[in-house]
Length: 484
Image (cartoon, rainbow, N blue to C red; front, top):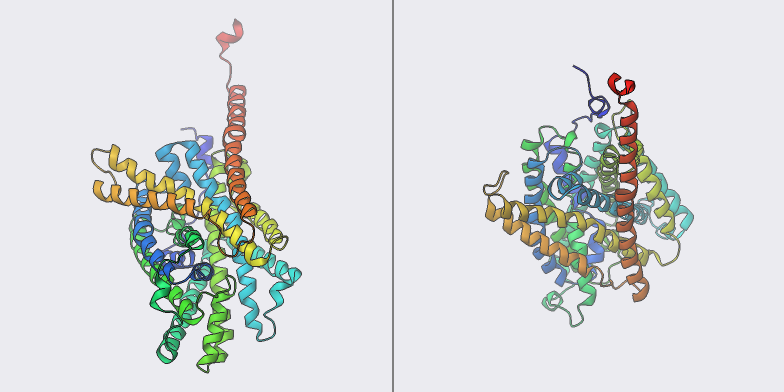
């Protein structure tokens, strides 16, 4: 029997991720300490926002991931799911937003790494991040290293994720532990009044979208569905444990920052500054350097997890010919999507450099983060919409959950996601120019969505017509037609 070209060219990826790897991947991808200071800066009311988001967004997200991964296992995750349920363009748009959000988010991770890692050098080096040459050099070096490790394969790259998860646990334990000691000795730095809705809540509104952004990540492993060992048995338990641990860590870390620092939190160095201050108050200042080291490892793990996971989107899009086909190539030795990883690193590197031009560091961080929130949440509109569609159109649900569970989770998640996207257009308190911020948000959103439409409708159709022409040329003409 003749072998089709598709079966010959279809690349095969290595199943390297077990349940423990997935739980650690979820923790390092979901629980990001770098977003906690920008949220805690809005006061105690954010604790209620965390609880609301956990119930209305995070719980439905876990159900959506398990349900969709069960129905549509395979490489691509949010790209594959939206494509199968809503059609090719929606799948491409979902995957595109998921990937391009990463282009904006990874530079914030690199910037955060620079701000924290200088504390490892000891006192007197905290001003180094203000040196643009130093900050850019360290950021680009870390980006190159993480990309290289992911090119070498998940068998190697996953250990950065795992080490990052361990660093996250240790850093969170130290932060929360010191907070408990400070609270027991000196009392809390906040009162019950701090947990009330402020008279002017416009700065708090932005936090809700950022909180939803902070809770994404359970879907990341499904983007690498072909690299999970026995995914139908492994994924549900890993989602449950990873989600539970991440939710607890987020609330505990936010409370600790509020107790230790109050609302005067630096959005970049707030966590390590809080630990340094608390450690000095209880006489264990020596702990600041190892804490900064653990937190630096955690940040590197976050960067590795998102670099490795999101690169699978252009990889699959390249296979589907909606983007250049060479993006769908795998490394001949390491069996990894190296072309997509390199392109992603180049774009992120450019944005890392742009981070150090124009606005102040904290404002630039917040603007990049806010636009990343919008793009990141678009795929979740499709994920939750899919659950609603299953519940309404199927006479008997074909997946893991019943009709009522699918409808409630889908409706809750869909409405919460739409609300999160809308509220992030309200500026955070670090923003100095409202018009500049809104131009950035609306213009950036329109730019990335328009670029997705170009690749799908223009580039994709051009590639399809070229394939048809090549197929026609390759098809032999019957002898009877020649005689005519």
